[in-house]
Image (cartoon, rainbow, N blue to C red; front, side, top):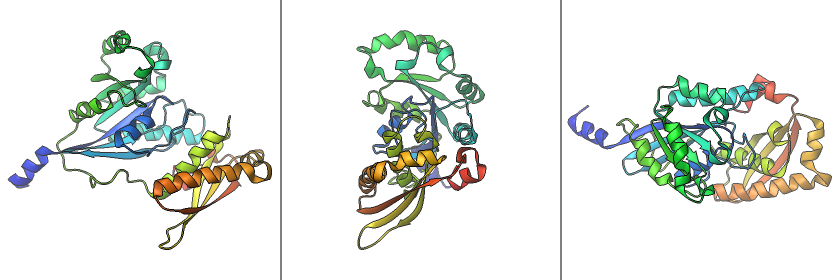
Length: 306
């Protein structure tokens, strides 16, 4: 490497940062806020994120590649085991780790931090930044100070920052903190790139988001989306065909609804969101397929991208 390249390298920083935490802590909301666009789907239901979503922040001389991960849980079936594998792999591949806690659900460290989450934290030697999320639910920041002090005394985290991912409070100040832990490096990706995930992935996530929003109880969690056809057209609408995969025949009737009304509603909402994301008109066809116990079938999980 010549001297000119060494100087250029010293001026830029780049690295991977994993975002981990329990379900509904605000991980996806935070990444979307930092990137400035919606990459990860967000719903009020826990365990919405299933796969690792990569978001790229490039500003001035810094590039941060964020890895949004599923909420840490005790896995009950094969799909959840794979999801937890994403978390472990993301931490292993990262230069720093953001750990989110939900202030509205936090009483004390021992009761909030499950064995699974504590295990991940103790095993990694990567720099860990604790983000105390949802400070907008408190009238004054000083109310959070005793909590910050008690967690700081545990010596588990390199930095502790109170934020509101939803409102954007303190989110900008997070970037310089992350920069401290990034290596001097050339950018890994084109600065114009926001993610490396293909459009098919985002289309399937948009449809799955509508399923999560529109159905209650177990339906969203036993549902997967498979994009069967994705045809870009120079003239006319793009054509997208997707299957909503469920585990039981009784669920199929619920998904479709009376005279197909519910499925039509899901299709309309999904189509509008997809058109907004792709910035082009689309023709969307949805089909419902039963694949019994797909969440415990390793072959099917691989076919769905897990």
